[in-house]
Length: 135
Length: 206
Image 1 (tube, chains in turn red, green):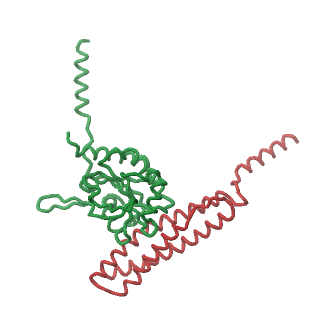
Image 2 (spheres, chains in turn cyan, red):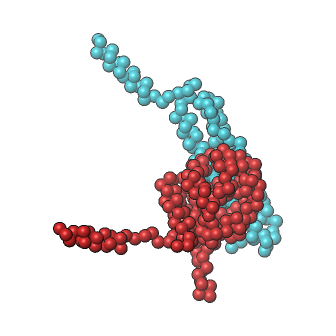
Image 3 (cartoon, chains in turn yellow, orange):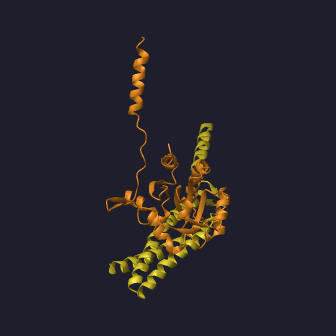
């Protein structure tokens, strides 16, 4: 009986150790992975920010020789997506707590970042199409 | 036994003769031949405001060696790592009058002169005359970044998104690109620091 109790105790300790730590009911690994996902998306969006800037330059060059109103809308779209990215970064701060408010904040920020990335992808795709036709 | 010092001396001189001193750093970027002369890729003239609100131009780096990078103060990922590595470079070369660091901000909307000064203060280099934080106008970012990163794009499979790559570029006294490294990796920055010393010695009279 004594040995069974010890064995049970050991198993309980082992299971407790394997369980991810929680803070206010929120798993810290869940917070960390959400943060990692957000920062990875930020980095990939910022890489495309450079593509977008270069595209704006190319559109401006075309406008110098062929003044066309149709280029303005895609140029503005690219510009707006770049601004949105910079605005997001100016507003964003890493959460200092590890509770449900931090989880909600990171989830909101991830939603925002996904929307920015989508707007940017659409603008870049539109820009590519126009630049192809102007070649 | 009497011949041992003589033989040892011969081996010593052979060793000295075989030991290669590092050659000059290559000149990177595309070059062209014009009238028999090689024209190397060069950083074009520029004029930006720095963290002190002063105009910083190509004349400010005339005959100087400098390290250049692209960043923005609100960047939460690679820029803080790059800043830590640039601090190491600053620490080693800040007293050399022939050396500068030029950090170009790609976020002119938020990285105003005041924001850049605040950022420099936070890094502990608020009064540095070696490290200049430059605000690049929005419509000039793509062109100037393209000129600096031409060498990187030539030598690697880097995608077009050049403004968030974490590279440090080493520029010589004639505004030619001589080396670059991943500014987030300390071992690569160690190598770059050795190359900075080499470049600073290149033009010294012997």
